[in-house]
Picture 1: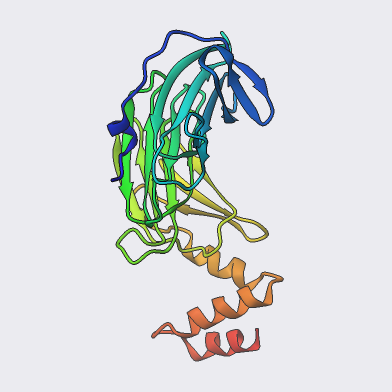
Picture 2 (picture 1 turned 60 degrees about the vertical axis):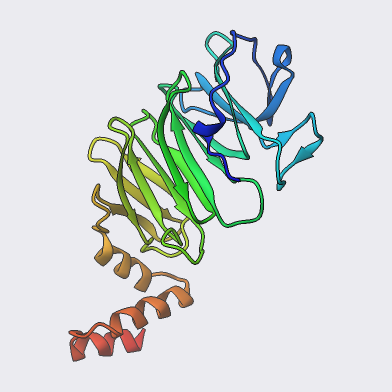
Length: 253
């Protein structure tokens, strides 16, 4: 049975001293050690441990929940501490809000994406019927995204954007750029930006509309990657209203 982060419950704890020793964060008085990620300001750290040390089990498994710790580095203290099945790939904002991926027990294609405030209270919980590929939170904790892998469900190969000020899911769409190197945010306009290495940056608006489709086509056609040029040309050549002149130029490419 899959239990999400909220189901596992928040574990309240008194403040504990925190130590960083790359790539691990340690809280000796809690007997805790796990991987960690820093906020841009380096004032916060989110740490996760995808294992059950008491049972000697880690990584893919059927039982034995992992743990996560949010550390306030200015005071060297633990701000939040909780458990979930298989916590991974944490991100933390400058306000201490943080996101985590739960990769779930067992071998089914599924996951839970969760975002919490700096006290460990849940802001967003998204149950997914596909594995999570990537996720992140914006610098000031206003937006978060997650991206999924292929599966045979409605959540196959999608990107989700969440408004953390309202807890609302803004959109769920199929990526338009193919292979993605990374995502970034425009917090003021609530945009998600796909950053494709060697090609450019391309925006999705708050409704999931891909507003830079034309720019992506141009960038692909001007790429030094011949396979990218061919795929882009084939896509445009299949458009029903393409002119003979434009088709001729594409065939030359």
